[in-house]
Amino acid sequence: MSWPHRWPLRVYFEDTDAGGIAYHASYLRWAERGRTESLRAINLPHQVMIERHNSMLVVRRIEVEYVAPARLDDSLLVETAVRRFGGASVELAQDVRDEAGGVKARLRVGLVCVRAGDMRPVPVPGPWREAFRLAQAAGG
Image (tube, rainbow, N blue to C red; front, side):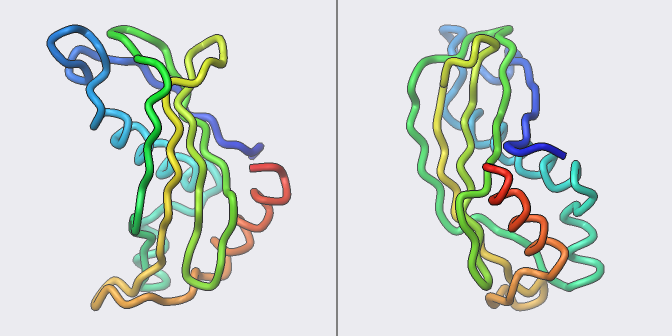
């Protein structure tokens, strides 16, 4: 898989406000789906982390800069890139772009790996750590 990961989407009516502009919370849903699909694309879905390692990645913080409006029926891409990772944390950059490559929104997402039962921080499991290392080295 090449990085950054790219996940296509279309702006549907349900994603917009009364003016046909993408509602601000839609970007958070799109980013979540892009993150999930980036893990699935490298055969490391959330469910495997939960089942094999009793741990999961959860959002600790998120920052969104809305650059330009996305509109009803626009075709977009969510680009997900690994910026850095530590023992129990991962920082991602996610850009929502239009077909021409123009940025609609920039997201910076801080994830933390926690134990599924008590939500205490735990180290990122080895397969995910290696995947994040490779993604970061590949420029993603």
